[in-house]
Image 1 (cartoon, rainbow, N blue to C red):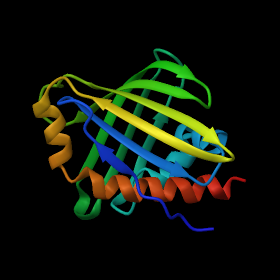
Image 2: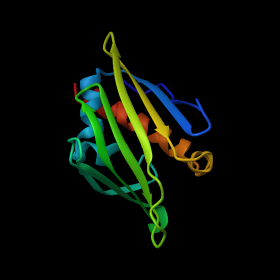
Image 3: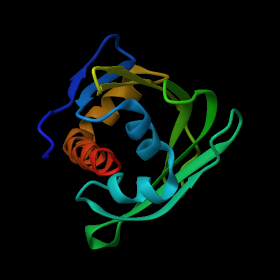
Image 4: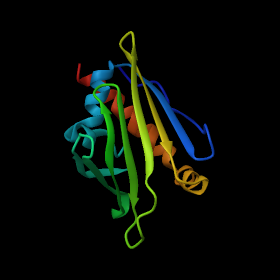
Length: 162
C-alpha cells in the first residue's frame, strides 16, 4: 500500500500552526512510530538528510532531542521536554530549535493527538509559538516540504508495522 494523503496546514490564531493528516494505519502503530527512537530515525528527516540522534525519554518531565545532518553537512537539531503523555492518544511537549551561538528562545508548545476511526488515524499537531514572529519564522523556513515528506514516510513505516 502506498501513502496517498497530504497534510493540511492551517493557522487557527496568529501564534498557532495546525497540521492535520490522516494515516492508513491504526493509531497504536502511528504512535509507536512517532515515539520509538529507532523508528523516528527512519522517517523524521524525510528526504532532507540523515538522522544522527533520536533521543526520547517518554515520560512527563522527560526530554527529547533530534539531530539531522542535511545535504551539504548542515546540522539541524531540536530538543524539548514532555509535559503530558496519554499513550496512543496525546503528547504535549516543548520544542526548541538549536541555533549554534544564539541564546535559546521561547520554546514552542506542541500538542500531538492521535484519533482512530475504522483503522485509520488522524494526527493533529498544534504548534503554539510565543509570538506571531516565531510562527511566521517557522512557516517561512520551508518546513512544509520536509514535513510532507516526513509524514509520508511515517505512514509507510506505520503500515509496515502491521
